[in-house]
Amino acid sequence: MSDQPVLHVKGRVLVGPEDVRDELWVVGGRVSFDRPAGARDVRTVAGWALPGLVDAHCHVGLGAEGPVDAETAEKQALTDREAGTLLLRDAGSPSDTRWIDDREDLPKIIRAGRHIARTRRYIRNYAWEIEPEDLVAYVAQEARRGDGWVKLVGDWIDRDLGDLAPCWPREAARAAIEEAHRLGARVTAHCFAENSLRDLVEAGIDCIEHATGLTEDLIPLFAERGVAIVPTLVNIATFPRLAAGGDTKYPRWSAHMRRLHERRYDTVRGAYDAGIPVFVGTDAGGSLPHGLVAAEVAELVRAGIPRLDALAATSWSAREWLGRPGLEEGAPADLVVYDEDPRADIGVLATPRRVVVDGNVYS
Image (cartoon, rainbow, N blue to C red; front, side, top):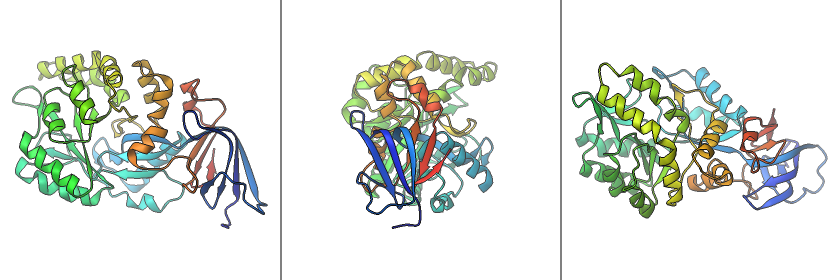
């Protein structure tokens, strides 16, 4: 047995939405539902326990101007930990954050490598900026560097058009996605507008970030192909401010961004009603702070997603989608304890009582 104290979590343990246990034990940093024989040094934590929350779209090691130093990246990860967010899908970062994997006190990260964007069609210092003929090679590179995901920038403002436009020709996207799949990686794409979505979905993409351009005619295609969306509504809330900044130079783009913002809740609810998988992501890093998962869950509920499904989108179903365990026998003991039942009041997510990472307890 490890020198680490045995942890006894008692009260109500939400192994699944309806699978509620009275207790679990943590031995050697792992979950057990059997009381360990001969355990002497036992610490008890009581309350409502959930698997560590998931932020399925964030950026560790990224700031407003590009990559940040390790100290800043550490603060980002610690902020997520304090919020109970213990599994992060890093949807693009120019920083090498592999050192975080050696830290038992920090969240676990699933990386998508670095963003892949069209030349001069994304935020400066964030992405590899390339042309379509190089897309397959860069996707292969990032598939090998990542943890089973690759991130494309699917659309961005075209300054000649003065509006959002697709970044990749259909066949280039198809070839790149096929290469990622051959290498065992899934592909996701940043997409704000409507006109890049059909090509990407028909090319075989696995997920769309933001998905503000999802329209009624596209929803059946997403549902049929099982393409997930991560709406990042706390980020979409910034669209009016962004639009105001472009009113003079790019009025067409500004008006488009406002329309996307105005219909954001209808878009998300329409996707949910059609059976499209919806997951929680905040787009933290870059311009948004980390630790916003509770706010994003609240936004999904505001959009009309039932509380329990919004909660699952940052816990049980999100972990299953990402291929990581929840509160299972022998799984790493990553969990969050609350004073009240988060199924009844998702506002509870904002105030965790205890956070447990690999069996270590943090306030």
